[in-house]
Length: 530
Image (cartoon, rainbow, N blue to C red):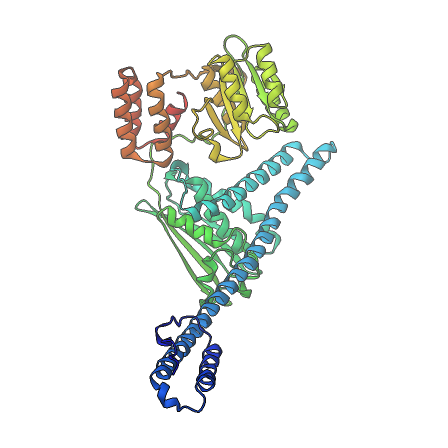
């Protein structure tokens, strides 16, 4: 008698059911063929062992099939979710494309009208172009905020601003569109409202723009109301409309990324309510929705906004610099965009600077080798040599003989190339506000501006505060801490700076005074002059 192997000891996982049954049939045929005429009972133990093996394979195979079915269902659900997200993102991008084209069309149209002299008042055109450019800037920043929020890295800027002016600006932005649609638009401000409060003005404005934009967009008849209340350091904003409303089933969906909240919303959601809720959450506030189909919607935002007293309106028109005391200063502007260079040249020459232009890094290095400059304004993203490479070569060749200002549209480049000490004195984001650039150059060069105000000229001194290299490291940290409002960190860093360099005692006293008053705006102004 030939002994068959102990099949029950063999691994069974992953054996298909059909193969297991086939193996059993083959085994029986083998037994009958090898020992013809003998009773199968003689091989009972071996066959029993083999049958156990086969049945184990069958059970395991069935479990594997069930597991595969579950995996396939999970994969199918994930695929459906990915396809839905992709479709929603495509609709979202299409909506954003429309949002971008609208202000671009206004800019392009008014620019053509200005070229045709006498067609339109240039001042009116300039106002429309400026507002459209600001809208585009806010739109781009909002899109970038989506990525920042998803990564959990967002900076909050707490500044002092006028609350009533902020609300009225948003109202003025959308009132013409509402009137054009035949809607009544009301802006309700209480009789008693603090003039100045502390808040992240840009993000609060973005929240109100998103909510009012949706209200006007989706309301076909009736009215839109923007109302504000303030009590006990708490500001409450309400945006009410008589639009189609949102069903209970969709009232959470509208806050999901790339979602529109159902057909009753009319499609398209601008920047979306997801970013609005995320901003409100970051600011430590609360966003609620009340809505009924056919009756309209109410979005309520509650935010902490402490009252700030004794402030002067910094947004009031300021006199324009028309020159400065002392010898004429020379500037080198480096940018591959000829239009941008023309704008900067016109602005800085009107302030009395001697301006030279370079279209790329190689030309900048050649000009800096041929003559001396007091300051260089350098773009970062250029063909050939990048701005950082040019800055490094300029510093290596000329040391600290001039001030270096970097311009970039990428905020992540603020601190320079990774692993290298920064060669620049100041970093400004594009699009740069021209008055901010002029002010910054005045501080870097220690200029005394001659300002045009009424019929005469006045002098405004902007002395530069010099600190040692050891203290400058602390100053850079203080600037970062002041931007995020880290009060305890600021106090510790000021003390550390004073211990490192006893000569910074007067500066530390000024910074401590700002800290005692919780006036981070004044502190940042002091730090910007260093």
